[in-house]
Length: 55
Image (cartoon, rainbow, N blue to C red; front, side, top):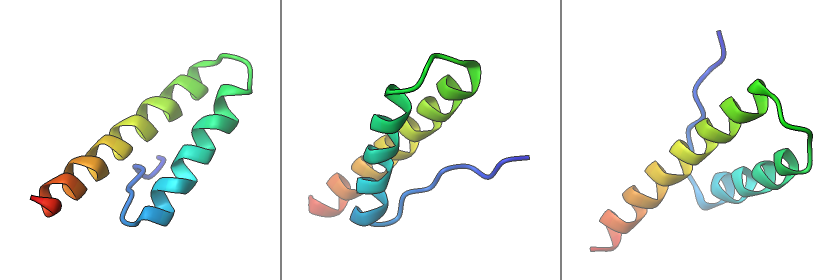
């Protein structure tokens, strides 16, 4: 079982963006799509928490 992707800091967010770029350069696969989906969810959750903290 793989652990979920969780983003806690801006540095984590930057690494996630880098990983998305790396994945986009690879051939399509089911595993790639799963990881991209997990990254997108984690990045969105981080953005929402960050925006909520700014308000």
